[in-house]
Each structure stands twice: as structure tokens, then as C-alpha cells.
Length: 389
Image (cartoon, rainbow, N blue to C red):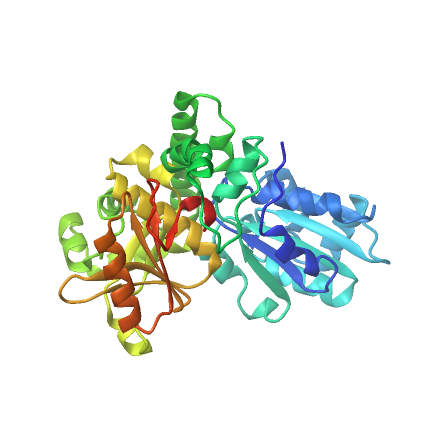
């Protein structure tokens, strides 16, 4: 069953614009399926879908004369004398592709839809050559609503401001437990048994490591990068100490920064900065680390229930805007602040004291809206669940 991703309505207004549409994100998040859905929705016969992971298809774009590339596409059935649509999947396999896209779209009425597995490569590929000529969209693993749809359930989720009753909580909580444990990768969700899901998660990590790390990166000490991932998993939701990480792995601080940048730009992790009204203070503070998916996290380490919940809430908030955290020197904290406007604190089973503390700190920060995100059912006010984020 094909699930329409929630990002699709954001892409739809640009289906017929002149600019290229670029969809990026970690491997196995469904970029190819989304691209195929867009292809099916573009109602013209003058369109072409090419998988660039196939070495035979890569040859179409290896010409130095871009007119020969145009000829190669014409042989495949594309007519450049009228509006044409070209869909290219996994563009990181073609190093000069931005220049090709720029040339063809400048000289002919052709619209490009492109996917790539990481911003690490796209930032290198798409420098000034397509400045002002592209729209970039990030695709993440399924959120909980998409997860529910993939299970064949049709549930009308409560309005954003409406609290969830215990009846609805009980209906959704069993699904949420599975979502927390195995995450939101479409290929994992589709597996029927827990053993199959674990194997699928192992395969996702192996694919990431073999293709993103070993094939495309220029890192010689890939075992150090692997060990860094394992160390970070032990620190999920915590501030990272670059000096300690460097000492444990026997490498320099610049190397750690370089590896962290790689992991972040290939969507495997995300580092979030502390909240501050001052931009300088935000930049100076230590960053917290979260992972792309709780399924991978659970499959490779043994985090606490609280750490898994917190990482999952991060996943659900990530597509919604800028995320920061707040922590005072005395230890008082707020897990997430979204767009400097809404405060969220994740708790497996919140208490009245947790709520009072959250409200107090939020008021001090002049943040008017705040919620506790609970894993267990709670009758406290200002409660949300992963279901209705």
C-alpha cells in the first residue's frame, strides 16, 4: 500500500514551476516511492524516470557535450520541443549533474525532479550552479500518522488543541509502543514479525555504512566513525563533550567535528543547540545529539525508555521547524523549544511537579505555550502524546 507522505502537499505547488525540485533525506526513507508518486501525478506522456543507481543509466550523463546528453534522453523518448519532465533518482552518482540540469533547463522547456541520499553531497553538488533554480525538500522516516496509515488504520486524530481521552489513548498506545521500538522506516514497518523488522534495521545500517561511509566518503578510518556512532548512541539526548570523544577514540578534536558534520549531513544524527535569545550565546553552547530513528537506536544499543521517548519526540518535531533545548547551570531544563515559541518536555510518566517546573521555566523564558509529552496516560493539563504532535 502506497502512503501519501505529509510532505507531498508542500511539494505539489511546485510541480509545474520552472525550478528543479530536489528531495533529500537518509536512505530508505521513501524518496524513490515519493518521486514515483509525483511522476504518476504529472499528467503528460512527455516524461522520463531514470534510476541513477543503475550503472547503465549513469552512462546517459557521462558526456562532456551536454547536447549529446539531450540526444540520449531523446532516444529514451523525451521530446524537448515541448514541456518535458525528467525524474532522476539518486543524483549523487553523477558528479556534474547540477551543471547538466542548469544547461538543459536554461535552453529547453524541461522540468527536473531530483532525489539524493544526503545533504552532504547535495551541498557539494549544488553550489552556485543552481542558485535560485531549485526548491529543496527533506524527507524523514514516517511520522506516527503515516505509520498508522501504513497499518491500514483510518483514525481521525483529535484537533491540535483538543486533549486525548483515555479511550483514544488505549486505542493508539499499542501502535505507539511498536513505533517507539522499531521506528518509522517504511521497509521496517512493512515487515510482519519482530525478527524481520530487526533484520531490516540491520540492513538499513549496513547499507548506510557501505554506501554513504565507505563508497562516497573519503574517510580512511571508517572504524573510528563506526565507534563514534556507538559512543553517541550511549549519549542520546545528552550534551556531547568533543574533548572526551576525541580522547576515547584516539583522534583529534577537528576529526571529531568533521565526523559529526558528516553524520549530521547524511541525516544519521542531528545536533541541537541550546536556546538563547542571543545568537552568540546559542553558538557557544554545547550541543545535544539525537538520532534519525528510534528503530536504529534500539537495534544497535540499549537506551533507557526515557531516552527512546525523547529521541522519538525529537523525530516528530524535527520537520516542524527549528529545535533548541534549554538548560540552566543548576540543571533545570526543557527538552525541546520549537521555533523559540513552544516548549516541550518528554516524560514517560509526568508528575504535577514536572508540570509546575515546565510552566515556571517557560514563563522565565517568555515562552507562552508549553506542553509535557507523556508516554503513559495522564490526567494532568497541558499533556500531549506522540500521537498528536
